[in-house]
Figure 1 (cartoon, one colour):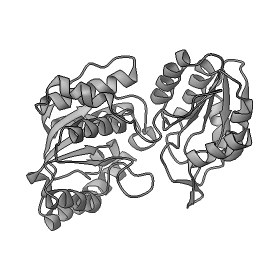
Figure 2 (tube, rainbow, N blue to C red; figure 1 turned 90 degrees about the horizontal axis):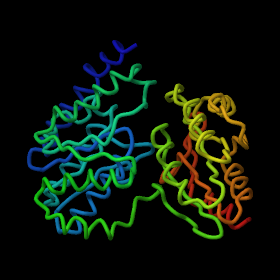
Figure 3 (cartoon, one colour; figure 1 turned 45 degrees about the horizontal axis):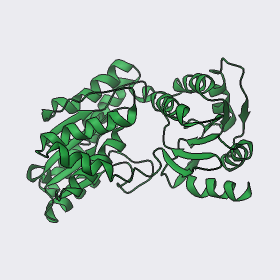
Figure 4 (cartoon, rainbow, N blue to C red; figure 1 turned 90 degrees about the vertical axis):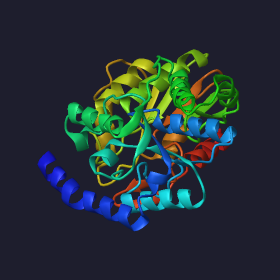
Length: 346
C-alpha cells in the first residue's frame, strides 16, 4: 500500500511542487520560513509565535489550519502554497510561519522551501490510516528538521499550554527577541479560535476545542479537570475515512477522564455515523454515563441540558471549521452557532 502512495508522491505530487516553484520563482529563498509540525499543538504554537512577532513589529505572515483558505486544510497544496509565499514576498514580508503536516512532508508539498527554523511540538498516535505504521509517521515528521537550517529545541512539560508557550518562546529567542518582550506579548495573546475557547463561564463552563486525536483529547481533559467544580462532560466523535485505530483509544480516554460522555458525528463522510460511534464506544471500560447521538446539534443540546452549575461541558473535534462532511458533500457548520443555539434553549 505504501508503494502505491510512494509512486503517487514521486510521479504526481513532486512534479507539481517543482512546477509550482518554477512558476512562482522559488519565493521562499527571499523569506525566512519557520516550519512548525507535531501531532498536536502546532496551530496554537504557530498563532502564539505570530502574535509575539507581530506585537514586536516583525513583518510576518502566518499560514496555518485557520488562516489558509479551504476546507479541512492545514499544509496547502504546492500551487496554493507557492502563491501565498510569492504574495508574502511581494507584500514585503520577511518572515513566514508555516504549519507543516506529515501529509505535506510525505507528499513533497513543501519541496523547494528553505526552512530557516524547524520545530516539532510532539509526535504521538495519528494518521496511521495514511502512514500505516507509527515509525513511518515519526520518520516523516522528522523530515522537517532535516530540511531546516536551525533545529529548535524547547522544554516540553505536562501542561500543554505552558509547552506551547515554551515552544513559541524558543523560536522567538532564536530570532533575537529579548525574553522580557516575549513574555509581555504572551500576556496579551487572545488565544486561537476553537482551541480551548471558553464560550461561557457561569453557571457552568462551556468550552470549544479542536482536539480530535487521542493525545490532544487526553491533555485537554486533564487540563480541564482542576478547573471543574462538579462534572466534566465531553462531546466528541471521530472523522470518517480516517485513522480507525484511534477510535476505541479516544473512547477509553473519555471513559477514564470525563464524568459524562456524549458521542456524536464529526465529518463521517461516506461511513455510517452510528458505526463510527460504536467503534469509539468499544473503548469504554468504566461504567459512567454514556450517550449516543449521531445528530451533532442534538448531541450538543443534550450535553447543555445535562449541565448543572459548576460543571464543564467541552465540545471536541470541530473547533474553527465551517463545514461538516456527510457523504461527499460539505455542509455548512459552525460549532459556535450550534453551541449558542443550545444555550439559548437551556
